[in-house]
Image 1 (tube, helix red, strand yellow):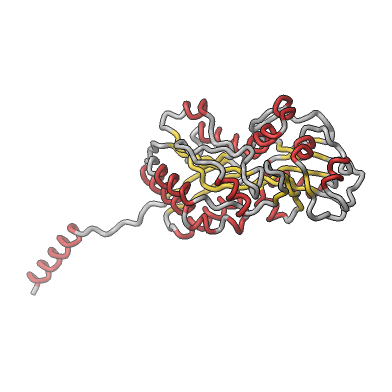
Image 2: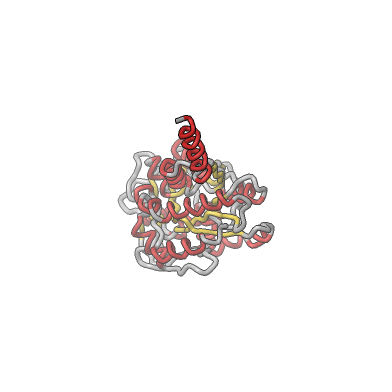
Length: 343
């Protein structure tokens, strides 16, 4: 009997050696930072993705496109996000290679704060570009009144709220203004930062949520913010005149028509400074996530590819409800293919 027990114990030991217990997978923590423009939808994605993937946690800091790119260059984050993509000079600094992926798209609105909260305020192209050039300074300006017959406009100075930080939203907005107003192009130009007119009627505020809060708190204010922030904050925003001369509200439909006006190139960086299309919203842009092609940790590389796939599938389903534009199907496939470069 004793001999049988010894043999049984020996057999069990052999069995354990042949089939060692499965160890729990190590948890993976991904860190990212950058653009505030897509922050509401990214934070929703990352929360749901982390909930559905028990071993991966994604932490994202909304601090502005410029700060995100700098964090990426400093290797303090695993990925970054930027509305102005990444310039060739910065890409050349990354020995591991860079993969830019457009993950969502959105529209920039001009939020305003006027007595009586007038609905349906229309701003022609030459009007809103000249407001941000500091040339149109009062709400009852004849050009604003002419576009809004029957609307009572106050004799109130226009307070212009702009970004204080290095901002991809500013880059997209000033690229558009430079495309439609030659004077703006020559005087201020485009970029993550520009030298706004030196005036006490120009106020600087950080990030999209900072501009949103400042507009809400300042009677007579106007500022550029992502449509999703305007929806969340329930602030009023203007109908803007597009290239075809139509006044358009931001929506998934007007944004999709704008995206359809441009073909995505191989490097996945496409700009829409002044899109064609009768129903196109005039200030529409992709926004990018930025990854290294070669990553030291294979588990992190795998987790980032899974995070991207989530964004391309479940993530796109909530875009419209959050004030963003679902990616065109052809772009989804281009992004999915390029994501395989992250190793």
